[in-house]
Amino acid sequence: MFKVRREQMDAYREAALRDFEHRVVQHVERCLPDRLATMGEDGVRRVIRSGIDRAATHRITAEQDVCRFIDMMLVFGAEFDQEQPWAREVLERERLAGPFTKILRLHDRALMELTR
Figure 1: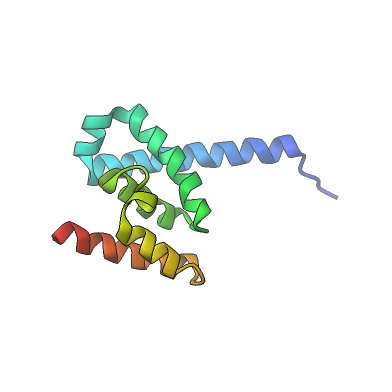
Figure 2: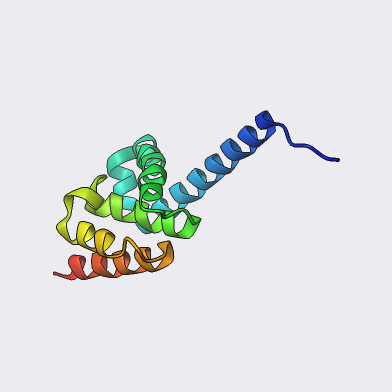
């Protein structure tokens, strides 16, 4: 029988995180170039790492959803989910909803806030 050792799983997990981080940096370069220019790549990478953890506290773990969450962090501030009343409201109200529904409603609300 084939067994995967803990070290192998940890190495795979780390490689997957680095790959995701790299793809999100490329996304930020395309979609939010001003943030990349202002924060630098290292600063954006710090937000990405923090965003992965912050999103997980809201049960948001799918890559595309985490990327959207990170976008909102870059636009509204690294702690927007706690500091912005509209974000807290959506996250608290959607606490029983699935993560996909939660991120869609949060994203829609963020777009509304940007157009104000």
